[in-house]
Image 1 (spheres, one colour):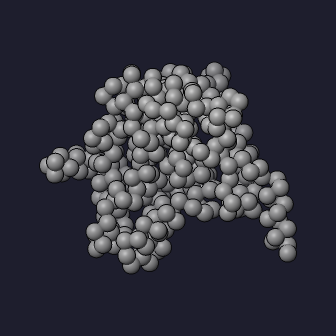
Image 2 (cartoon, helix red, strand yellow):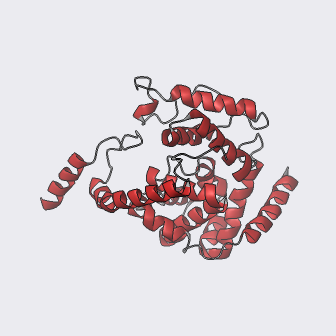
Image 3 (tube, rainbow, N blue to C red):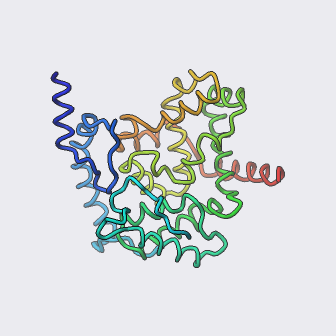
Length: 289
């Protein structure tokens, strides 16, 4: 009865809609989230002060399709009834980017990234330039017609798992599982709609600051943390189900602890190694046609 009372009290305190406009699912763990939030608010205030100092008091980041009714259906700010509705700003950003970078145009998955940028910046121009930095500089060839950069990095992850988590790699190889089957959404959406929003935004901070290597750190941490769970699988459907479980629970909800883990769990990950693996994997993919 005490646990049930605590859970109901937590439900009453934590809104059904999060600060970014996403509706919480029916099975949302209110008690665990309340525990996390008690410390999270203090950290947010401290980080806001650091960002303000970093930006020199400017208070905002400077400049460094199709209609998307389907983008974030569980977010109240993207519904036509919202005032203001963010569908039009999202459309404007994607349309402008498609005209600006015609070699890439619009690719499925880009809408979720642009949507998050609009939710955070609340500004079309800033969202456009951040999207341009991601697609054009940080993640080149991820969203082009051939998606060669995306395919290459999925193969690179497989090579890294083979080096750092050989038992998991052996399981994948034994069942003939392609990494694209398991992690394509992680890479395409940059963990949007996969990890909790607070965690995604912390990952993106590092992505803009340190580059695409962060994606490998996140993926390797998720896999290493749940290695025992993954190795329980005895079939391809079970492997797929285990990988869905990696992105749920308290480990990914506590974004502060999670971010500390991504810089310790995978161990050394030199950019030189990433570049060499990318070269090798890209050449292999091109040879395969």
